[in-house]
Length: 258
Image (tube, rainbow, N blue to C red; front, side):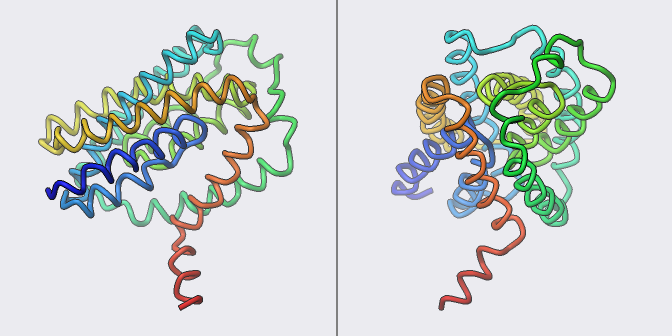
């Protein structure tokens, strides 16, 4: 790997860590870069988890310190997501993800409508749901999201935020804190699967992690200081870009302007 790739990896990691902490889909930046750097797609997928794990650890610590993290209910929702992530990572070792990317792009486009049409739900949450213990429907939802996160990291944060806001009743800032807890735990077990299958390159993974961790620290601080409205606009922007990338619309737009 050429030396000039490493500064690019750190810069991409910072941007990805910032986006992942506030919304999700930062891996749409880092995965193509790792592949460009010469890693096979499945190894890039595994290597990226090193950065995500350390990034979420930084974010969780920051959110916990600010008193934003609901640790008790967060851990209850983490358990099914971890089980799903293990299954998803095992699938990812051998499966092509192109069809799933198209399906996820369509879902993100639909999710954009939900975020735009029901803004108060995302800003205020539903306190009555927070008092209830997670039911089987919620646990099943987070298991399915965990499968996707284990399969391919990109975009899992957005689906977790949707489940935490619409299903569990959190507003966006507290949802982001729990989301990072779930991703951290899920990534730990998913990473183990990739390590056992020899699909992790540690040097680029740790270099990427340095950028991710710094981006996560800044993002968690801004989320707490600026509140749910700021996070919602970041989420909307990320959903739009992610949907365009996953559906191939960004390539189509580029061809039109040539």
